[in-house]
Length: 87
Picture 1 (cartoon, rainbow, N blue to C red):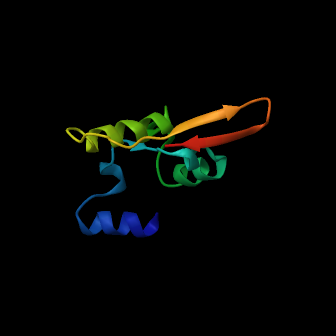
Picture 2: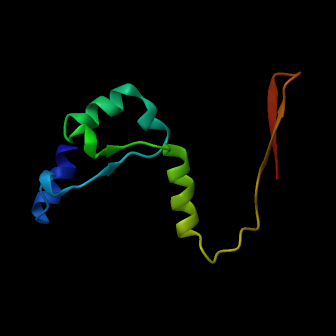
């Protein structure tokens, strides 16, 4: 984080200029990650509402106009306690 904030300062951006920090992805659910981010930013600036949905929304934004031809089914076999993936 220190390196990131140093780079921001080189671009003229101070921590006080940052209005919000959006945490996305599975790692942000770890308490240690949340504590680490709170060391640098005020808690009211940190948002972690739906970290997985944020990833999906970002992917949708990048993929607008792109046709998806391949996809993966994830099949769960509860009686066997296993799963399988098929194209």
